[in-house]
Length: 77
Length: 248
Image 1 (tube, each protein chain N blue to C red):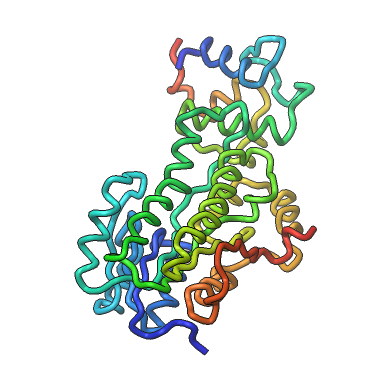
Image 2 (image 1 turned 180 degrees about the horizontal axis):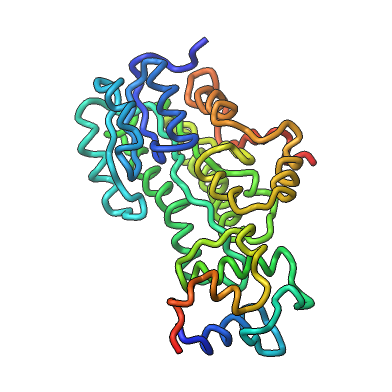
């Protein structure tokens, strides 16, 4: 997936007013909680067929680190 | 005491793991004959070898609804069924923002539509004896909500509706239809669910079950009872077996 398309879709899915950047720290988002984690896991599964676990997200800080977890090879540009 | 009459014949879906596999083993140990349906034959290879005269396995993806009747027709030459247990099903986390027609329909296809098709085929006079018993596996989630489980909760609630309506439709032939609703039973499906939880979350989920997580053998005796003549006045019911999960 195109990096910018990923950022746009992920922003829309989490219904954030400010667009996500690769250096946005997800855990600093006001709404970040167990439900957002669940949505993130389902979002990644839907678009990348990768089954993340809640425990996998413990190492995630920025959007970029989530992309690394998904696998940078899955992103264009 | 065995509830199951030796020589009686059963159809079990989801026969390769969890509750389905445990039901197959219990039925065979009680002298019944079983047609198991699932996807991976190698998971029941040991059963096929031990019970080669009374167990037959048919590999079938139950989402292919149009193949179900043919699969059962091929087997029925040797005698009609006395019962059917629908254990096939899938648990999937679908939080609302990720719900779409495709993933929700896929969940309904395996958890509900395949059961209705099996029920339609099974209830034909040429496939089942009068007085047969059918057991569906619903879940405590049919009545209780859980975040992220819209699809799963909806399908499990749908099963209880199917059971009540089918119980009335089939009562003329004294065919009974019931559901059981377990909470978390340790199985490959629950392993997948729990694998991703942190230590604290695991402890929290376990605490929701006052007597702890269940095992397949906490559930199988109730299924055998519902299949047997000992429960011949019970139909259209949904029986919770949940270690106290639903009373908290």
